Image (cartoon, rainbow, N blue to C red; front, side, top):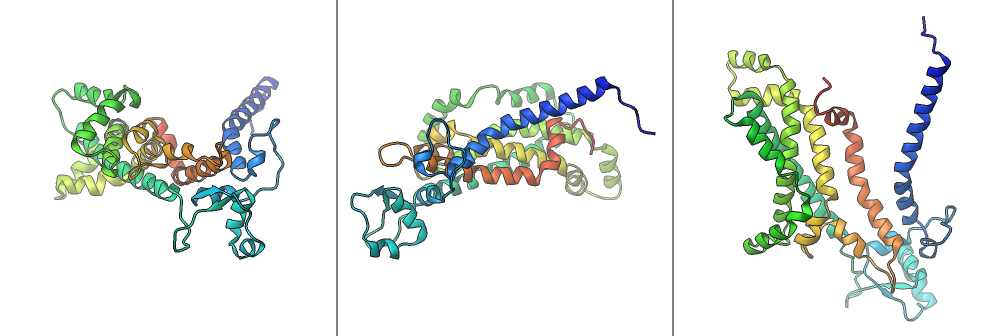
Length: 319
């Protein structure tokens, strides 16, 4: 028999639903604004009041991936007709695509910066989660002298904001030749995420009964075999949740990437705001770069969304 709800319970339930919808809309509003601006014509990007209904176009993306210069002379009808559709969009915006002496189209630096972000974020996430899992297993399964002090020391590396240590790190990196290198950022992001990975994974591994490993050891497994065949499969949910948080942190990091890199290893976050048009910032191009930058982390988080609840609860909810 279904429980009968009182009018007060019904009102509270409706209020809660309304509150969730309002909060969701507030969080989705910036994403919608970025996405809509990425498809707007440039003259509609900064209108007051904002333009909500418009005919979308792909010219911001064409500009994002190519080097451009201001169009001083309009192209001839023959040049305009012979140009690819995306190059005609650049012409329509009062600019032209820069070509090399052999007539090859010169790409902008965005694809390279986007690739740098993928390399740095994925590699640092794998290293942080891998080392964090081994470290957490050691703290969880063995008696370590001064364990609480060591765990607090590991956690203390996250207590300072990145901008506080950016200048000292820059000076040290310059001295050892790691400035503006992929490995420089990878090591930095790995160290920054390692403390979070250790603490989060320790909570997950503590939940796995020791009896599973003891039974495996009795059956002739080595400690390492028991770890890989027993502990890791049981901790898969925790590993996935930890990887999501580490990837998001490395993917979105701005301060270190701005100070530690210049050209060769620069990632997308410090590069996107530098996109300017003819004289004034081209907000549609900046929005297009931001919109594409959001996609990998959104897809990665969506694929592992079922593991995030346990990650947010710090391993308190059982599988």
